[in-house]
Length: 286
DNA sequence: CGGTACGCCTGAAGGC
DNA sequence: TGCCTTCAGGCGTACC
Image (spheres, rainbow, N blue to C red):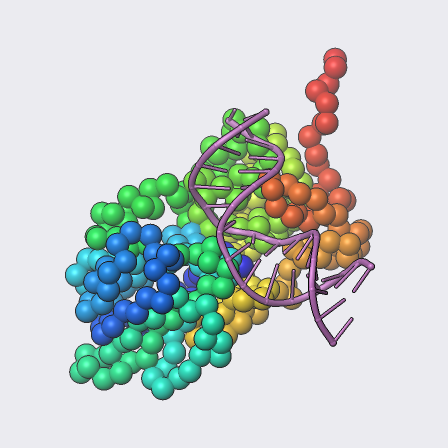
């Protein structure tokens, strides 16, 4: 499912095909994927794409007239570019398309939004002020999250550390896969109460979050089922997972069988040996 | 405050 | 072989 590395992979791969192009026609096949005005103009028809911006799992397409379209891929969403004359491998669940032309008005292909489960969506915003407002609820991008941000979020929180990592208000971009991978990297039990983490552990966790995300980007993200990048290719990171999807298998570090449970409402996998540090179940009776 | 359940949605995978 | 159930999950929201 698309988390930060997958969205960043999409941003990088559609960028050369989209930025500088004009949207000759915006086609909406399913109006209910749009939040906000759903007119062709609101979907950037007639505008030229000035740039792409990403925060966490959100991708913003910013037009030269100031209008903004935010794409969220949910868990099965795809945003990819089709060359002129290209055809869709699977035309089902395509909800929106943007027909692009170059500076001379020549066909420059089509940008396609496809999302079988429809957990994703499109947000139409009138200007960048609205974009900043829309993004105000998100924490800093997890790719370069400062340890101080995580430290402050953990300081007084009784939540499980994994819930903190998944909280987009704290830091933007971490989902279930990379939360587990980061906890494993930092040797921290995902159920540890955030406020029990020592400063050095928070530092390590922040570093692992950045590392696991950037390494995933280098492999163009993770594909479990649906994800493809902006040029329709699957991600290559899956083989690199240490814990996600590996419950019952051997820990890559110590060989012990990986455990699985629900933490923060999500399937969670960890190594009971490498990530052993758990808070006491009962308060010390003293 | 935080945990839990639910709803949204489809398709893969497992059970019988 | 085929139907039925279960599960997966981002995210908002209601509830305890």
